[in-house]
Amino acid sequence: MPAKNPVWGHALPSALLLMAPFDILASLAMDIYLPIVPIMPATLETSVAVIQLTLSLYMVMLGAGQIVFGPLSDRIGRRPVLIGGAALFLLASLGLAASSNAAVFVALRFLQAAGASACLVATFATVRDVYAERPEGAVIYSLFSAMLAFVPALGPIAGALIADRFGWRAIFLTLGLLMAAAFTQAAWRWPETRREAVEVARRPAITVLASYAFWTYTAGFGTAMGSFFVFFSTAPRVLIDRAGYSPLAFSLAFATAAVAMMVATRFVPGRIERWGRLGCLRRAMATILAGAGLLALGETAGAASWWSFLAPMWVIAIGIVLAGGVAANGALQGFDDIAGAAVALYFCVQSLMVSVAGTLAVLVLPGDTAWPLVAYAAGMASLVLLLAGARRERLSRADVQNPSAG
Image 1: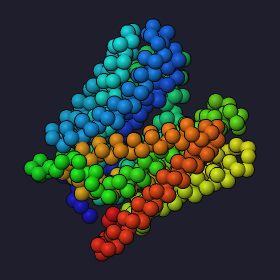
Image 2: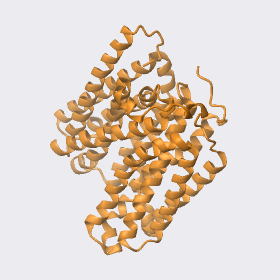
Image 3: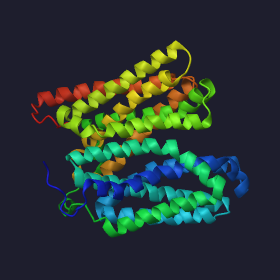
Image 4: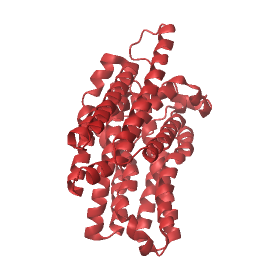
């Protein structure tokens, strides 16, 4: 088992409390804002297109910014990028709470996304520095994947409640105060984790894209996150429009998928030790494929219901967590000298997979049915199973004996 990073003295629960807020807030800043989007054109005296720009700009910068901040964290360290990103997010959030001008509002959303992007890449690069090849890493990655699914379920509800009680500015003030707490903890307790030894001979970041393992595991993560993205996109029309759920009943039902992911996280470390990383990825894809099959059967049966739509998603949720527990370490193995850049490429590539293939599925197939989710989950899972099979053959030919390799 690799030695622990000597500067990181936090036990796993403490490390999660330190790291998780940055993962959560990066997503929350997008989702908590959704309920007030309809009122913002009149509030800022601007057009609907400009307000829509604040949504798309945040998403683009959150992903693209990592291409800048990943290599930067390899050069100057994780801590400066994290602290700088947190400070930028905090100041931008407070500025948004005080803003009354559309141009300023758009600019501040851009800066808020840049800060979130820096925090994300520094957090995941730190996880790689500290927990590479260790069982705790799988726990952290699985929990982060579950959180990224849970936040979209609860974020809009929280935003609606805050705006209704205190006004729209309170949403951004809340984000600022939450980041202030995370910033304070990080400034006090987050040491630099980049190993000094890797400063000497860093490879070009482009070498990551030449790795077959990188593409196999990144596609696995894209399958997992994209399945939840398509579920998120189609669930309102299926459950509210077709099944007749009330908004509250829908919110509670929707949250059960995230709860299933949180529960499944408890069992990931033991499965990795037993099946190995590549074995876990293959089983994760098989589980997602099985869930897609159950969805197809439910849709063919006719009426949308809890058991025809949500229960199969619980099966897919198990596959999502299992894939999330191994995908990052599998994709990033061998790139410790450029961990920041590798993490950035990992998230950007999977985001591109999700945005292109996931959006295509939702647009081409009927959005008030389970077919977009069936198509995406089954198609992507099948592709990754083919890639994983080829990966397994490569490892066999190389006579690799370590069952956790790959």
